Image (cartoon, rainbow, N blue to C red; front, side, top):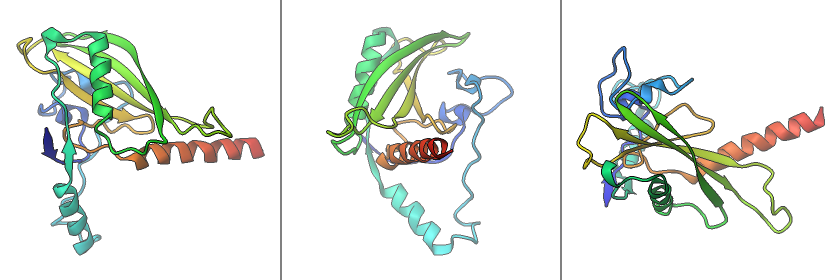
Length: 197
C-alpha cells in the first residue's frame, strides 16, 4: 500500500485526527509528558522568505510516494504482534544496509479512552574497528488501541525521534535516514566536547 506523503509538523491531537481541545484526544496522545504541539509550518503562499524555492520544495514533498503496511486490528493485537509490525514498517524505510537496529517493547499504558503500547528501535552503524558504535539513535513508537472504536478497527501508530517532540504518523511521513545521522552526529560532537574538557 502506498500513499502520498504529507510530512507536516502536527501536534499529537492533530496527528490522531481529532481537533485540538483542552482535554486529551481520543487516542490520549496529548498526554505525552514533555511533548508540546509543534506549530504548523507557514503557508507557502504567504511565505515571502522562501519564494519559489519553498514552493518547489513543497511540491517535491507532495509527490513523494511512501510505503505503508496494513496494521492489525485491536482484537488481534498482542505485544509481540505489535513489535513484528513495527519491524515490518521499518523494512519499508529506505535506509542503507550498514545501519543495524533492534526493537523492544517498553511498557503498556492504560488510559480512560485508550491503551497505549510503547516500543523503541535503537539504531547504530557498527564497523570492524568499532563493533560497538560510539553513539546510537532511538526511534520511539506508540501503538494506540482506542476504547471508543470497534475492536475490529485498525490500531493507530505514531513515532518520534529521541531528539524531537514532533509526533509523526508513518502513513503520512516517509522516514529519512538523515534523521538518524543527525542524532548520532550531534551525540558524537557532544562526546568529543566533553572529553576535551
